Image (cartoon, rainbow, N blue to C red; front, side):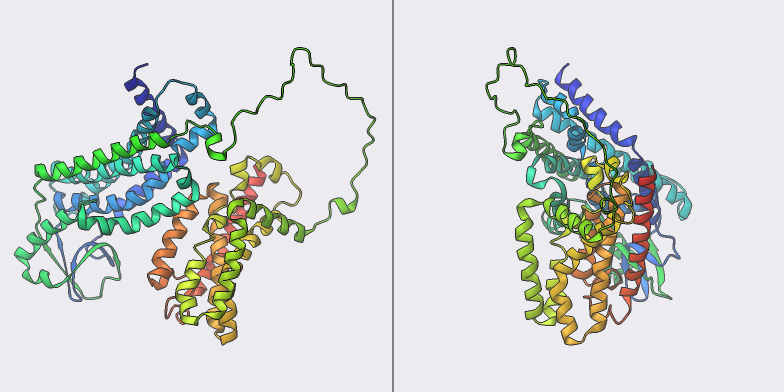
Length: 533
């Protein structure tokens, strides 16, 4: 086969493997819902793009140019984050299914393999973009402000702005899979921070999503009709709580003029993505396990003459089976809990002892440091460090292929499930124990209760996602995002540990207590279904 044929085959297989999965169907539904939400109704209590003050909100009339550009900008930011977690398992899938061992024996070049996977990832993301585009087309007709559809004005923002960005995400996903330190949970968490910080920082140097050129053009059209727009704030994204009585002012925007300079910047983005995909080929180990473990992949010969060697005869021994005593089947929850804790620590043996020392240091720091510093800084940091441990809850059986062995054990729902959940709670208490002791000694009982609820909520969320998805990826992504937006950025409704001023008094922890009960219940139901099946 020629290089192009192999490239096409790799791309095609990667694409088909994903679109035939239930996960892809779920993502398609999510894309449709997202496209619908991106175009709020005039009377909705939220906005996604425009300029607003306490009395007036300014936006363009819902024509093809406005809806296409608005939905494209939001889709680019949305899929740049969520899309990565949909496609960053192409190499892992070949490895777990054994296909990688076959690929390793072929003369196919590494660059063909990584570029083919990047293109396959791009097709998956491109399909999602196309679904959102169709949703945007439907939303123009549903909102009904301008019924005449201009397909060119509606589609060009997706073609010029979103698709090159999706190719970049697809290539980065392959690179993360080929660089050993970025595989798994570390890479998943790192990518969230890359998304959070690279978009605003790069926008000053390189218009990654294209929001600068679009927004400046929209603003110029609006200011020509409403000069006071220069003095009001700009909104891009979700802004909830549309003030009661605020009026809506609309203007007509006919779209951006696509120049060669704009197209050149997007071609540069495609070139960077190609370079990243080829860079991944330099790091690709062709599924050689020795590069992961540092041990030779083939056991050394010990000099046995196979042809003339006769194994020693093993004498037969009469065996008399005896029934198990009551002590053999007795329930020892403490032993089960200790075993679960041991397995959890063995997941990352290289950081096990350092983790224990770190937990001890956090407890001491929580007692010694001032309360404001411990709640505002130490506790959020302390509850980010164990993410990789929490994310393994409920996924061990799927990762190691021990479902049949574990789920056929006696009383697995009574013993192993609750021991696993308590292991996650112990990690929470070990990380935030110093802050809890400090709150207790200072008499802040309400704050202490809020932190305890957070210590129960986090492992419950991890266990729920682990049981229902069988993967640690979902929790690592969602928890890191929740942690950053909530406690770290002071969003009260997302403060699950009670560190944002006013959240404890507002009773936010009660919502997370209820969520904890629901998550544990759903995780239990999911594990029960796994055992029954």
